Structure formats: C-alpha cells, structure tokens
Length: 240
Image 1 (cartoon, rainbow, N blue to C red):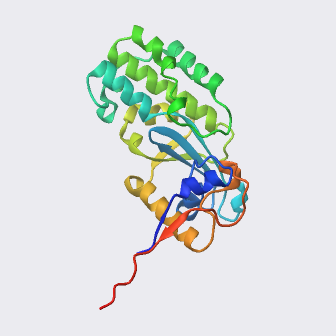
Image 2: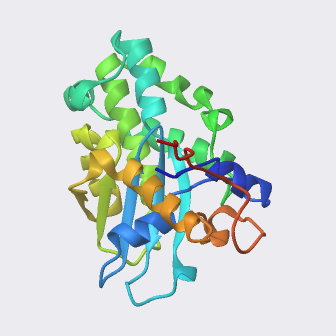
Image 3: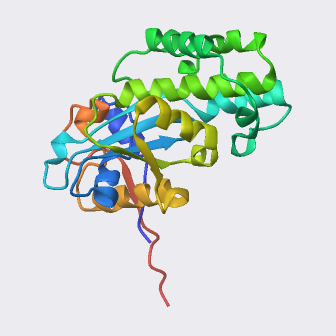
C-alpha cells in the first residue's frame, strides 16, 4: 500500500503554515449544492468554509479559530480533578458569567493574528485566569460560552445556514449549544465525525499520488504551485 507522509512539512517547505490541512479534503468529502461550514472541535477549533459544489476550489477558505479541547481539558484537570469534562456535564451544571466570557473572548481576539495557524504557543492560558474566581462548574460553563463566542465571530460572514460539526467536541452538549446560541445557526454532527480526520488524510494522500497539492495556497499561504515536497513510500515487492 503506498503511504504518503510529511504533508504538512511539504507545505512548510513551500512557504506555507502547514495548517489547516483538511479544507481540500472537506471539499471532496462534504461539498453540496449549498455553501457549508465544517467546524472541527479538536484541540483547537478550526473551520472550513465550503462554497456551493459548482464553485471553483479557489473559493474554499479555512482557518484556525481558537483553543477548544485544549482549554476545556486544562480547566477540567485543574478545577474538576478529571482529564476532561465528559459530555460537558460540569458545564451543563454551571451558570455562565457572561461578562467574564466576553472578556476572555475579547482578550484572545486581541492577540490573534488573522490568517495565522495556531500552535501550543497560542494557548494563552493567562486568558483563563478570571475563571479562578468562579466555582468549578461555573468556570466550565463560562469557558464553554467564551469558545462559542469566538466561533461565532469567525463564522459571522459565512453564507451557510448550518454548521456541520466534527471532532471530539461534538460530545460536549453545552459547547454545541453555545455555538448555536452565539452564531444563530443550527448545528449538525457529521455522520462520519469519528473518522473524518483519517478519511481526510487518506483523500489528501490520493490527491498527492495524482500530483495534486494536498493544501490550498489561499488557506496556508504557501507560494509554490504544483506538487509539494512531501514523501510517498511503497513497500518493495518481495520475490517468491
């Protein structure tokens, strides 16, 4: 079986950021007759904005939005004595401090460089300091609300009416509710949400084997056109 690897590194070598990496695969897998928003609720939340199926791939856009499960899990470990908040149970019990949630969302927005991919250096854990004054459950609810506000700001100009969700955060009910509340859009979980990332990388590998770059220049800001310097491996055929 041929194996493609170093796909992010190929984009970096071409002057890009290496992320988000899935928008072109999202186009292959999920485009429809109407525009769609694919929102991944992973360690960081990131979005793919898909135009209608008849549009050019040049109109596909994507970006990182904010820390998501990274923030929620840090809070759970610090305040809930748990690796994470299963199904958002603590957040569901808590009461949102709207002023605190707004302040945290504004604080992160002021530090974000538009269009830049996010990494560990962008967690900005000091933004979460105001949560220390709240009870553990209220802190979980308030942080969830702040993430919903950040996602709303990132999707405000999108044409799609429904946000399609993927990633581990789809199991966090209060988070999904916060996204609907602040975006004013309904949400729907991808039927193949648990496998979306693996499927996307497989699609990108197939494209790369056909000489199609796996990333989009308008998403990662890479400069090179054509195949990128990734790697494809194939096990040698054994002689009988």
